[in-house]
Length: 185
Image 1 (tube, rainbow, N blue to C red):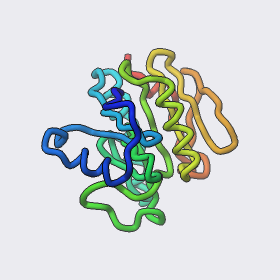
Image 2: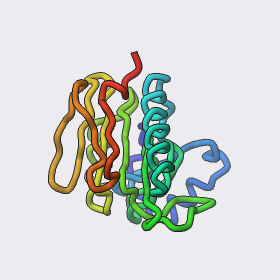
Image 3: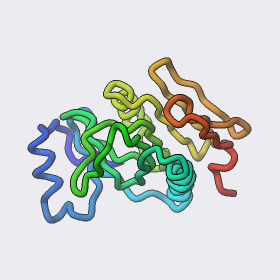
Image 4: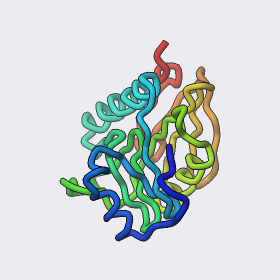
């Protein structure tokens, strides 16, 4: 993730920057008021994100729970926090109408962040803290290098290794996923 400039922006200033013609093909995020461009990742990280979108999407559709978005699904958590998680789930109850433009004006129920070589751990940590602060009950941070998933909730964090299993808890009851199935060989 590359910072655009070392300054903070208001909501209106961020919207103006996002809407500039030169930014039409960019995914910009606002983290603590600072603008970051979500950089293209490598195929491996992209495949991992797609696995989450596919498997979460199948489960959510089968159970008619809500919606799953990919890396260009944008969420407004607060005036200083606008994120595009690599995968996310939002329930029907929290998002009864799908926005056709702009951002979803809520925090997702589940956010998945896949750490790519261009991500800074400090920025990912800030995003996790903001997700939890502004109402995302479950955040999964996937580390392709270590082949682990850090599971974050308001109760704390734990890391699950390659032989472990993710579960959707109260957010996606009944959803399970073996960590080994996340990482293509």
